[in-house]
Length: 326
Image (tube, rainbow, N blue to C red):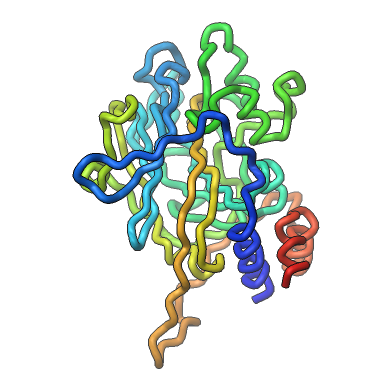
């Protein structure tokens, strides 16, 4: 109950303040396809900043976000479908996990405070969790990833001068600032870990995968700003999974996903969280399936539930604001 109250307070604070993450100079683009009512937010990535200059190897072309009444949907334009791998030197590589940062903090701060959400959607990656949506996430590098730092990804900048994380993180400096609060001159291999996988967290529900036909039926415009790639797929998340965690309202977020080998894409957007549904008379909400916990890293073992709550409060200025306004 204390944990639930804390997240409600954080949700209220986020809904009522301006996002602390600086809005990128080249923000994503809102676009509604002719004949459709659903507006999509697009972040377009460079087409040749993946594994090689070949745009058809381990590359993202972009990410897009839209809402329906019951779901919010991420579309990824890539050279790999969500359940495919690409083998290099007999090692298969695929997508990492999709991270959702609602905290208003830079990524590393949110990661230290366990305020991240994430989705494991790629069944072939090496994340040690089941498929689905997770809260209280700690992020890290997936075992077997080619690089263990983003500095490694940018090391060949003279060969790939346009490498980016899409429209919303369009330069290495913007990437280092968001993930680590670092200037590009201060970045090195040891202080730029590759955050591409769930290390620990608690599963709170399943997600649905959508093919390109379903996405086009929802108004995704493949002709818009070079969004189309060899494979386009969607991740649909029920809003109800968040309605019992956050207070109702509009929330800003930064989302990102990174391949196990290289390329990544990020998107800054907004979603609307509805009120949680009240169970009909006679139904006991306690009969609902309990969340599935994933073991915490060794550094967090031994902490009590009260200690975790205190740690989050101490590390999050949002929690402080929410507590002061309680």
